[in-house]
Amino acid sequence: MPALASHRKPRTRGRTTPAVGLTTVALASVTLLSTQSATAAPAEPKPSIEEVQKKVDALYRQAGTATQQYNKAKAASAEQRSKVDALLEAAAKRADKLNETRRELGSYAAAQYRGGSIAPTATFFLADDPQSYFDQDQLMARMTSRQQKAVADFRTQQKEAAAKRAEATKSLETLTASQASLRTSKQQVQTKLTEARTLLSQLTAEEKARLAELERKKEAEAERKADELARQQAAKETAAADEAPKTKSGSGTGTGSGTGSGSGYSSRAEKVLAFARAQIGKPYVWGATGPSSYDCSGLTQAAWKAAGVGLPRTTWDQVKVGTRVSTANLRPGDLVFFYDDISHVGIYKGGGMMIHAPKPGANVREESIYYMPIYGSVRPS
Picture 1 (cartoon, rainbow, N blue to C red):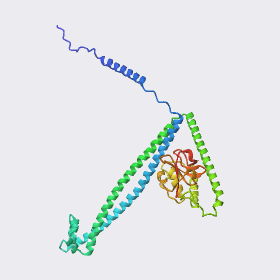
Picture 2 (picture 1 turned 135 degrees about the vertical axis):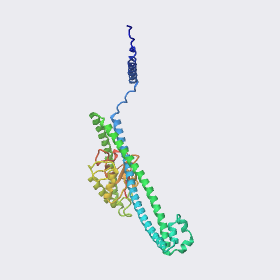
Picture 3 (picture 1 turned 90 degrees about the vertical axis):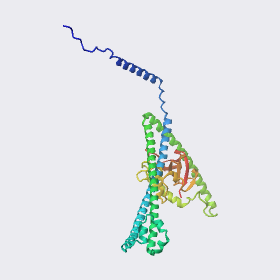
Picture 4 (picture 1 turned 180 degrees about the vertical axis):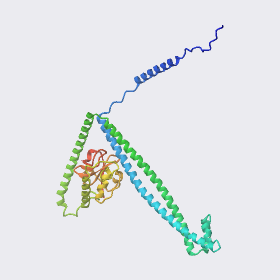
């Protein structure tokens, strides 16, 4: 009996090739990674404590600038919101008056229709182009004086209502822009503060101690300069007191150092400082205006408000209010501004010292005016 032919396919022996290929790729990858590791740039050296201090100070300053931008946008938004509300209310009143006049004209038209004819008043009211029809002299000639007044009022109120709607729409657009700026400034503040906190959190205990020592040295130098200013001001006051008897019989009481001079200013300044002292120990919170927390310009605004003087919200606007005075001629109650971008302000208390809300993480406190670079000073009027 003949043998049956086998239908089984021959076994393939080339299935190990993909594994070899994968092994080759893996080896190549390891080699590539090894090469990259060998050629990678070395890590940047860790910054010194002095560099960290400068970086943190810069971040807090940038946060201060962003805070003033936030304050400005918030004030603008609030002002614009009030304006929009007033315009919407005015537009609603115009619409009510327009509807009232429309109803009056409608009553004329209905009465004339019931009389069996479409009189000029009704024709005007129902026309596709009332303006062109109104301009016809014969229409006005045939209307009663009361009807003429109603039509004139209708035209006027139409224009006024349209103008108010357009003004309200434009104000809403401005409000939207202010709110967008507000959100942007808020994000900038939060970003800068997060960067500063992250940088500080990466310091070791020893590095934090060294940073604290640098701060103490900075404060000591600032206080030394404050003491020197206090001595100079005291010497100036003594000299002025010695000179007073010689000029007493002369021409009046003399002149002060600005529009804020005199007993009136001193009285207000006492109230300002009394308020500011009562806030010492309360936390700095950016964008805050009291009563439980403040930012720098929020504190100065609230303190001068206690003395009956209204100040704008931001440092950039507060520096424009009153009379500019030199550092040597500072008097208690004056406002001292800092940095080239005028992003910080404090209240001068005398002796080279001020009361201010310093920065996030700190409380309202007394400090030398020389702790930060001085931009200039103002005596509010």
